[in-house]
Amino acid sequence: MLTIKNLNKTYPNGTQALNDVSLTLENGMFGLLGPNGAGKSTLMRTIATLQLADSGSIEFDGIDIFKQPGELRKVLGYLPQDFGVYPKVSAEMMLNHIAKVKGINNKAERKGYVADLLEKVNLYKFRNRNLGDFSGGMRQRFGIAQALLGNPKLIIVDEPTAGLDPLERNRFHNLLSELGENAVVILSTHIVDDVTNLCQKMAVFNEGKILVQGNPQELSDTLNEKVFRKHIDKSELPALENEYTVLSNYLRGGKFYVNVYNESNPGDGFEAVSNDLEDFYFYCINKKEEEAAL
Ligand SMILES: Nc1ncnc2c1ncn2[C@@H]1O[C@H](COP(=O)(O)OP(=O)(O)OP(=O)(O)O)[C@@H](O)[C@H]1O
Image (cartoon, rainbow, N blue to C red; front, side, top):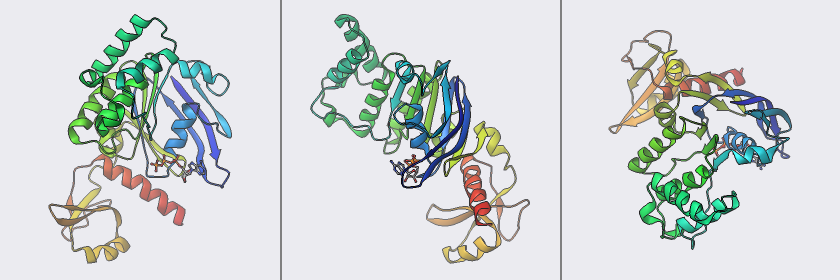
């Protein structure tokens, strides 16, 4: 179990990236959803012992991670947002090297272990190819392989599917959800669908704060019969924004739509839409902005 209590972090330039963050996570996939600059990477890097908080505590299975960062690193798998690779090194050589650093000293054991891992992420047949020649999806799968070295119990993946094609994204999802069976997996993302598809628990995070947490389905159910859609001309948007709580505007099939939050159907051409997590997400972010404006 991962327990985060009252975590705060202000960068020297005055940006408060974490504002009294408290969370408790059990085995399974946890989605941390928030817009750019919300503080997700700051939280991920702090849990991964790569930077310190100003105050608060993080405990994982009895390990106080600020006091015993070395102990946490033994059970941690981390795929950072910007995952650089050595371009002239093959996947197998690189994993072999990381395995050595992680203390798998027996050469034969290491070779078997690395081969299993490459198989698992569907890269075995590319094991001798240089990492610099990998596609984005292959590189991400390699990133997961390195994060899995040593059978981690806490796995952190920071915005892992950005830039992946749909097939690669599916493969990546399947791999991640398998991992959640035996570990705490934190998926930090701004892609709402990833959380809908993968996570049993989630939190919406913005401006360094947890706005809400729970089960994705249960959270989106709270907006049942409160979201309405209308096809409009783009020029009508400012007027609608004055009149309604506009959650989102988007193009579908080349037509412009708005989704609004309202206690009942406003009529006037609006139709009810089935609730989804994206509307809930926009609702949370929107509510926060409205409160801030008061
Ligand atoms: N080293 C730093 N020094 C100063 N400010 C920083 C630093 N790192 C992050 N920030 C600021 O802290 C806030 C949170 O950044 P963070 O990268 O944690 O957000 P994020 O949710 O991961 O965003 P993104 O989705 O864009 O990666 C932002 O306002 C960012 O500009």
